[in-house]
Image (tube, rainbow, N blue to C red; front, side, top):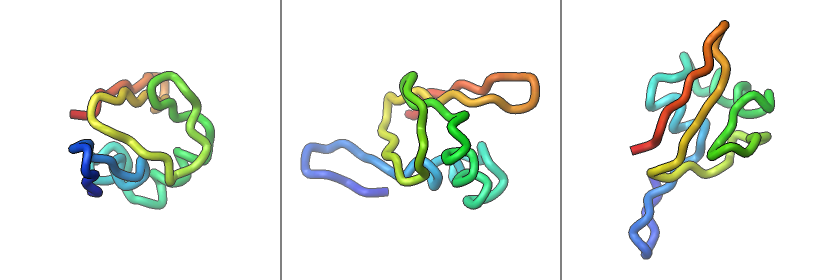
Length: 72
């Protein structure tokens, strides 16, 4: 996790998905990011290096459900 001088923590979205156990591996998380099925605060994510911060909302399909989580 990176810390900035303004106090906001941020992390690559693929690492966050893996650490939060929302994907089985970091490789799976990278594929999800690049599949254009993942949304961060309503916008489509196209790359695994996108930054996620506390307060962000992630949503993505898993099977016949949609998973939505808020980053704390």
